[in-house]
Amino acid sequence: MKLRDLIDEAVRGVRLHRVRSILTACGFAAGTAAAVASFAITGGARAEILRRLATLGIDLVAVRPVGEPLRGAEPPLTYGDAQDLGRALGFVRAIAPLRAVDSTVLLPSERVSVRAMGTTAEFFRLRRLRFQRGRPFTAAEVARGDAVCILGSEAARRLVRSGDAYGGLVKVGGNWYRVVGVLAAQASAGGQWADGGANPEREVYVPITHTFAPDAFRRQALAEAWLAIDPSVDPEAAAPVVQRVLERRHEGKQHFEVTTAARLLSEHRATRGLLNRLLWLVSLGAFALGAVGMMTVSWQNVRDRRREIAIRRAVGARQGEVLAQFVLEGVVLAAAGAAAGIVAGVAASGFASWASDWPWMLAPLEVLFTLAIALGVAVSSTLYPAAYAAALDPVAALRFEG
Image (cartoon, rainbow, N blue to C red; front, side):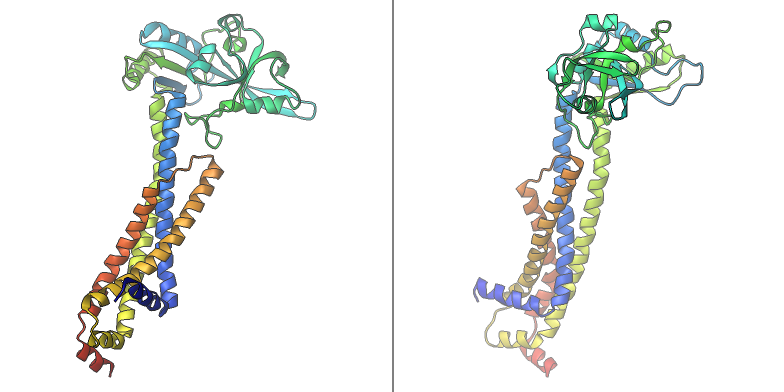
């Protein structure tokens, strides 16, 4: 019997139990869709991590305060801490302190809440922020505390509704600032920046010294500080040293966290990994249900077609042909379900990627691997019933039917 004839017989066998066949195919479709979505999410996450590492850099150590200080107590992280770290640690190439000040901007039709982020010129270089127009602060502007500012791309659209923000004046709080730079759209995902914090496109940056009170220069609280580590030193090894220096400055108190950029991204990837594992569990469960349904349908087909099998064997059909026919029935059913699942998985993961602004990446080999799993499950589920059908004695089968 030719392969085409075997396939035609397999399709006819699948149609004998339409409802069961459709339910079994749905199980394979669900398993395939979950596996394809998992591969797409994993590939996108891997590409995003590599892109973010290239954007953020792996030579950075971040220091951030934890919790709120008691009334009258020294802040957990201060500008003085940042200065002392630069002097005490020879492997620190540059430091970019960041101080957050909540403020408002009065527009013609509304009052907009913004965060004025006080920082230095090093911040834009260490964080690899690109400029659409203009430049970062100069050292002289930071030293004098000049009334200049840099707008994130989204902040520029919010605060300057018409015309070009660059070179204009923006009133933040009670002060007017000259816009010396506008950031370009940066690499982010779902409004989150590479370190998991706020998107710099939404911020207004001013020289950090402009945000200080004149009587407490070194005690001003920082939102975070970024340290650029010398290339010859592993940032993971430098982080504990930074931690110990800060603990000595704060008399053993640990009101801050010290982490590396690579560790921040690793934690972000671990969160994505939870979803990935959940999808694989769903996929395995769906394939298991599909295998049970496949075996049930196959056994039912063998039982209902004993007479047909006996006649075919009596007129010369070989055992291998009977075996191949019932295995092909499972393969046809699994292939139909897997095809629908691949389409559904690609569509679902693509929509999720678009909605969350997350890269979508799916290799053809991963699709083929998923299809191979579905077909392998189908073959393993139908092999025993097919072998049983091929081994039937024609005389005994006809006697049973009679």
